[in-house]
Length: 116
Length: 109
Image (cartoon, rainbow over all chains, first blue to last red; front, side):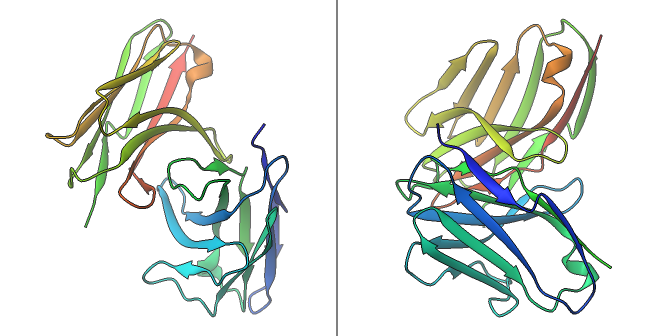
């Protein structure tokens, strides 16, 4: 149980284009989803927290107009990187919680984004 | 601002050794602490969760301890195996997960 999937697992896009990453909870309802980014050999940094049906809460320093998060249902959240630049290349990981608890998160396998 | 540090950053050991991974945090006002495992290019798997009122948790060959007052946690891995090779992350929870820098472990046969 408690499986979280991400799609795609990797994506390459050209600078200036937008790319959407999906995060799905497969066998439970996720009231809260979290989005992280991880640079090579660095730890995970929380980007934003989203509750179903509400606007996402972004961490300090994360541009909400650049990283659009939608959590339209209890099983799906999407992260759209708009007008991507090479510095946005990173590993993006989502997680989901059925109880909205920070310490009960189930992590997806991650999406490797490369912007050329 | 809460900062989480892990030592060592990397560790390479022969199979069978007992290991200790260290995690330190600057603010003792945490709700709990978690240890995760991350395989290369993959997501995270939760290994152990220690509530702030607890001192340790055990799962199989893994034992994690927590000393809130000193801002430290250790992850003990007994009889290490090549399959234990991964990056180990600790994370503390005030209101969100704050991750440490990780320890990359390689266990060779």
